[in-house]
Each structure stands twice: as structure tokens, then as C-alpha cells.
Length: 263
Image (cartoon, rainbow, N blue to C red; front, side, top):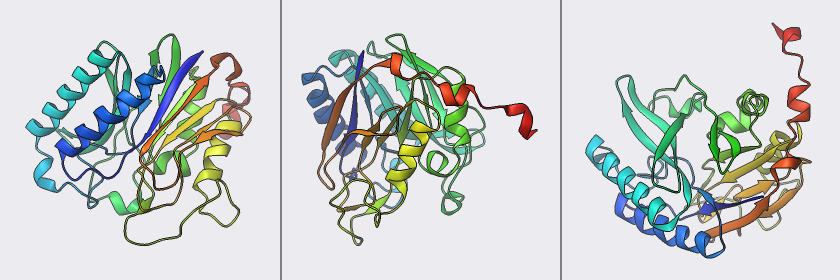
């Protein structure tokens, strides 16, 4: 078993504000014995246009924030999936760093399928990776690519991932519907897509969203049979925590995929 936490922080007003909430939510997760915590998409310095400005996206500021996160991981003994903006010779990437409970950087996953509205924010990544914490293999797919490019999740499942973490952002602080029931038929499709990513691959799917005023989906953990195990409270900052049994994530349906039929 491994206990995972999904964070739902407010939009950070600055990098320092983001680090404040990161530490607060990490401590809440550690109090419940969580071993890994995932934050939403572009958490440091914050999704573009929703808080921190471009002046907080310098290489030095982002590196300093990553160093601070590594220190938090080591001090609290918890692994962290930290989505960030990150400078690269090709341009600004949207990534998710994986930090061990010793504070070591294990690598990062890039967002490879950008939403059409993001083409002027980031450059698309080109690689996919598998990570391992406490003997459990997992993959990461970021927002749009997890919702609309299921191949990103199937790839991870076929490489032995028992969990795919899904940092994302959908919602607004200014307008929108107030959701009250998870997976309601009249709600946006995002939570239904989470169910499909889990059950079509027979793995766990773990999604982390911001606690905005009008979120279009909640931070949610979906079991390999497609049932929602736990989800956050809409619009309320906090963490949701649950035990995951890797043995139940067989990847059966992903492994039965006949790739040769589609070449």
C-alpha cells in the first residue's frame, strides 16, 4: 500500500505565496502519513494570468523555488510532484518535477500536448517518463493531454505504471457554475474523463486541481475500476488523502491493446 495526497491550493499570488501554501498542505498530508503529494499544473509560479506575473518566471526565481521544495520534501519526509514553468533552450516548458522524500530530484515530465490557447505560453515537450517511489511505478500527464490525449496515459500504463498523476487547471475565480455533485451529468466532462483514463487502462488516476471560486472539476482519485475513491470539496483549499493498493492496478486493459493494428 502507498498513501497519496492530492493538493488543492488557491492560486498563488506570488512564488512566496505558493511556497507558503505548499508547506501548509504538505504538513497536512504528512500528519495523515501520506508518502507522496501532487500539486496542480504550473503551480510555481502559478498558471499564467491567474496570479503571479511574468516577472516571477526568471530562471533564478524558479530554481530558488525548486530548491525550497526539495528542502520541504527532505524535512517532512514526503515525495512531491511539483508542476512548474521551467526554462529550456527551446523556450519555456510546462513541467512536473518529481522530488523524493530525501529531497532529491528524480526528473520531470513535460507537457507535450498543449491546449491551443497555450501555444503562446509554453513550448511543447517531447519526452515521456516513468518514475518510481516506494517501489511503485507511476507516470504523469498534465491537464489537456490527460483529458484529451488518452494515449499519454495508456503509454504509462503499458510501461508498468500503477498510478498516473494528473496535475491540471480548469475553472475560474471570476465566473462559472458552482458544482455540488461529483460527476454530475450536467457538469463539465472533466471528471468523467478521469474515470475513463482509470478504467480504460485498469490503473489509478490521481488528479490535482486548484481550489478556485468556480472549479470545473475537483481534485480526485479514481480506482482502476473507474470509481471515484475520494475527491476534494469544490472551492475549498486542502488535501485529499487515500491508500492505494498497487496490486489492484493490473494495467490489464492497457496491456491487451494491440498496437500493431493501428500502425
